[in-house]
Amino acid sequence: MKVLRRNNRPGLRALFSKMKMDTEHLTEDDLTFMVAPRINAASRMDSPIRAFELLASDTHAQAVPLAEHLSKINDDRKLLVARIMKEAKSHVAKRSEESSVIVVGSTGWSAGILGLVAGKLADELGKPVFVWGMEEDDEHIKGSCRSDGTVNVVDMMTANTDYFVQFGGHMMAGGFVATREKIHFLENALTETYVAMQKNAVEVAEVARESGETSAPQHVALATITLDKVTPRFIEDIDRFAPFGLDNPKPIFLFQNVTLDAAKQFGKTKEHLEIMVSDSTGSTKAIAFFKSIDDFIRDVSVERVRSGHQITLVGTLEVSYFRGREARIRIVDILLEKA
Image (tube, helix red, strand yellow):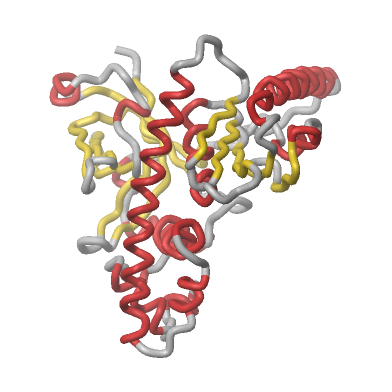
């Protein structure tokens, strides 16, 4: 992180400039949600050599058009993912019966972005999802899968090797190659495996409970605090434990009985959520990217927001330098207090 904040590589400087990033305050979130998608867009939408050429650029003149190209194809990637998501959800909605595992696909869906589609569907549906596609010159079907967090997708595929030409990955995500003849039978096979694995997990949990073993939940709030704590100084103290990631999660805080003063969507297509909250100690902004108020709570009308509604806000803290220095909450969840 220190090297990146002080980097002199023309390619990275051009990419940071294109995104209007404040490199002095570069964070791991910036890398995860802004830099990495543009680097990855090269292999998803074009050729990975484009990303290499950017990073290996010797001059600003070489780097700028490459940075612009990666940003453009990343925008194209977002549109393509949105289109396939819409088609995939339409396919799922037309089914007469619900399944514990979703297998969905279509000829013409580009394999390079199916992992993103599978991840979004798994998050929305709360089920393991296998998404497949096939390019015109492909002999086999190619796809990606994502777990709902309750099952290992590689174990699921290992139990059904007859359906796959090739597969790999880890517990939460994987990729596969399958034959055209068997792809339409894959959902039933995976569902049977999932049900059996869930039954086994329940039996293991019962044995663990009987023996006195317990497992801690994945997301635990560090503390309940008030809104006056949302300051750059307090966040700087927390950031001394950075960088945060999978094995060092960012601390989550509870803000109880705060008033929801306003809510709005922002961004080019109004895809992000911003709310204003207050308590007896002060007020602050909270945001969630690619979310709406309906993703958290479904019964808060505009009128109730205007009149002020009591909520418990669950979130992490961050400082934004996009338009000046601003301490804010990144929303993890919103819980309605009882009326």
